[in-house]
Length: 353
Image (cartoon, rainbow, N blue to C red):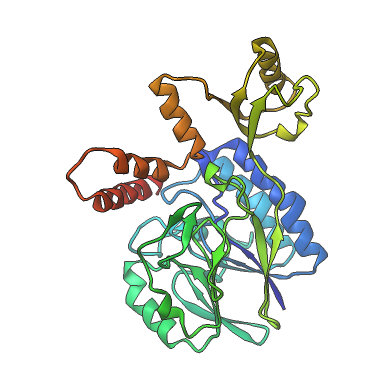
């Protein structure tokens, strides 16, 4: 049996951006659903964070979720199992109030029974798999006990394990210890958006780009084979973030193919600009000949501090935590820098939620 795996789909991301909704829809229309149909995959496990915001969802996003995702799974009779992530739950200390109960029905008025609020062992074919949702306060002790005593050899969940890369350049320093999962042959998890593994614990990473942190990070979804226990990644070539390094010493931009930048967010770094008129003409082409979502121009010749700070932020790829962390390292202070960074990280996560 083969199981399709999704995680951290974040419907409604970037403040319900229609650009990201369209981009995500392309993934489902052009890659995910054609693949599972062609390969006759009839089982899906979602590893959590189906939606982006814990407190509410935009009606248009909810409609898109139903039409583009859930209804198609239902019509294809896909055996769907959803493990709750921290973004799917309203409260931080319990999973009992969650978006999935409100959004997912069988269209005959019944709430689907395969939404997991607490650790549950489910047998796929002949293979028992422990499914572990976001471990919040009210299920912490129960979850740790089940994980420690489970007879399943495979664990899937929305887990926060120490030592793994959350996103490019940032490693998690809190949460669960790796050794509590030592009894499992393989642990497959959502939550962190950067794909990584240590040979036993596998973080799948997001299926598609969501922030500039995802720029040039491999994206795709996964398929798990219950017989071979192999985890296979299906690459997603679709991108929404692109960079241009403008150098008119090397490139004739009058003839440059700009169609590759259609429906994209662009950072244009000015390396060499010897002809202002040609530069303006190129930028005008980007604005008028394609459907450009956004462009940020970073001129490396600018010397004023505002431009310099703005460039630093943009070049970090909207990686706010990196920017703030670097700032803490540079300021003159007697405070414990690590505690200050931990406090900023906590505030940042609360703001995202």
